[in-house]
Picture 1: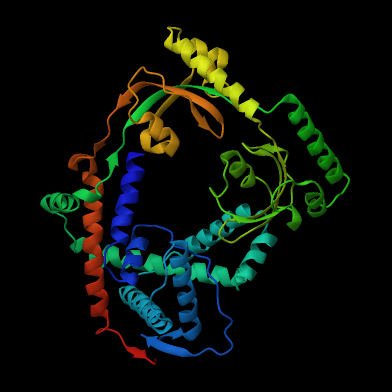
Picture 2 (picture 1 turned 90 degrees about the vertical axis):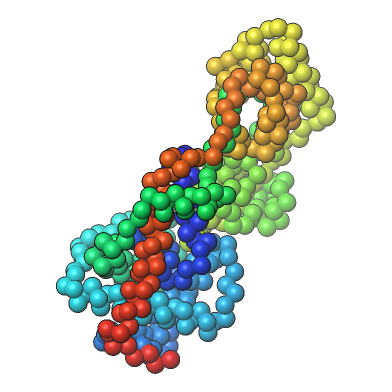
Length: 451
């Protein structure tokens, strides 16, 4: 976790600086990060040359593709495009011209790229997408929805990887050897960015006892009978849409059970979330039990961004006030047994329904405080070691906790972050040196900008 947190912090820190979009993307390529590769294309009826760089033409369609890519990058980052269309188009043209300049410098220095490695990388990425979407046909359909063919994608990806290889060659020969990072510069960077430095949060070793709120046996049996009836209808070829309208008790029943498009973490229950993103397209799930009831799930399609169009047939499990009171009484009794001197481990083994900890005497494990849910953080942040918390009601049921060990967090020191800070300072210097280098290329190579 230490290295990942540092990498996330350093990446966010670089992105927040006021460097040009193109130069920032160049350094991303140098650091071997993978940019977004699938983008929508406008249908181009008439193409034309908008610029020439060292006898290499830049077409209007090239600019159009970069504009769409830029917009999708912003959308995926949750950002809004504030520049006008004309400003974005001009910026993308500058990006393409600078890329052509770097390639011209590389070729002038007799640098070559590994075309076989590029083709292999493109095929590897296509294979990954086929695995993600389930079949080549599904991938091609998703590309078509974005205005691309498989051939378009191959060409776009090949160009992108080729540009990145040329960039790494140029930076490796003309930029990086002239960049020196002194230790005092790294320390000055650390002191200037103290508020941005990552820190390690408090960690807790926790015991727990869980008493779920169970519906009555009669209600559970009735729901089980309804689920079995629908499963039998589906097995005999019944329409999921029709059966959802007939049997589902969810708010989307009138729409044939259609929930809509969901992404990871969008659903209220982690069990549901895991089931949805493990289910192949077109296959009905086994019954999935959540805190609200029983779900039969159907994935209608997978979106290019990985989100899924979901339908469900839902059977609520009604929890009565009597069910709630019975569970609360059970957890209260368990807590009182511990307070009266019985071993927490013994009570947990006898009472708890948590499958991960009951067999270990209630030992749940050690966690960073910030990794726990907000509800658990509030209950445990000030809990003294050895004391048993008041009963806590959650969607899973009633909990009591016992903190057995607490380790205070700390902000990482300069020595702990030194290697990562060195990389951050080096990347900043490379960005500046690369910007100056590209500007100098404008005087060395022919440029004819037509718009």
